[in-house]
Image (cartoon, rainbow, N blue to C red; front, side, top):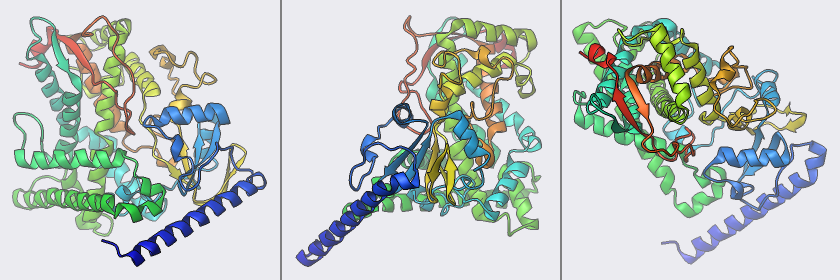
Length: 506
């Protein structure tokens, strides 16, 4: 309980800081014409433009760009943000300004307490440390050779998914809920590659450990996808008592202990059973640690595992759900995709990863889905003053590329709201117009893995099942809350096994 004096002191500090912030905003407003900053909506004291934000940020930002132009300046509390909603301006960001914008914001509590003080590949500032992380990712995690070594893991998890779907669908159509099954499959894929463990399914490795893992990942997604007001208005920490930060700190400790346990377990099994260095990702990285301990520390290994789990699971499973939703709403596209598979792969064997890149129409379907429903891109941060779209952007500005708006820009795409895989038939994935994984130095390094998981899963689902909607009504394609662009309504569908399943699952 605060005393009267402590309460008065707190109120004095809050009032003083509020006045300082209001004065600073006034000065910025008066100097705006001289600074030639991007146009900006009306702002409010203390909170800036936070009052404009809605759960569907991509749509809010799109409306702002339609009213104020392709480059918009915002104040989210005390944080300056520049929003880019134009492919030509995005190209400028990822070419001429790529180094200046190659940093990440360093004020989110999740990055500090869960992301090892902003040192993971996603959140690390541009520099020697980040380049080392990128090198490890390119050579030891996402290289073609390394991914090929774990192809059997991915294929087995897809077969497990097909088996689950086939349980009641051999004789007639069966209703299935897709989201949980797809999510469990992608988590199993990553964990099997990382540590040789399956946390979902009848033969899961350790039920208690799996339960702990699921709880940690669920909370990490919740905190990562939530907007904490005190991240943008630090003064609010005075009123919250630091409760939110305490929760994030505790989650970070639990997550670190869990990841360290995986490393310790893999280290023990490696030394006692003489497993090869390629048996899991952790095994390989621990072998590298022996020769280069300064580059392959336990913390760096844990950071890579964390990024793979958080960035490589939810996004892939949700993309597959969007693809299948699109196919159910466009049965003529589904039939054409099945015909391509039957012609080039056949009904005697299950689709394999090398086949994916020989199926151009399947690739076009995935690309068109990513165009319409791509996850939000991670914000950039200016390390120096620069010019974007003809406007001055000061250093320490958060720059956000609204790929959702760019992917639906009628100046770039013909009939942009329609689902037309044919637009990608001739390799029409032009940089800066199509950027579901980002561009430039900070583009997502996990693109090859995502392509394999999504392509193999979607292709196998089309090859092995007949699909129909649960009713005559089209599948609801509304977006839900969250940075990973989930469907507002999880997909339910009807599936019926095709004859090939009797061969590939026997």
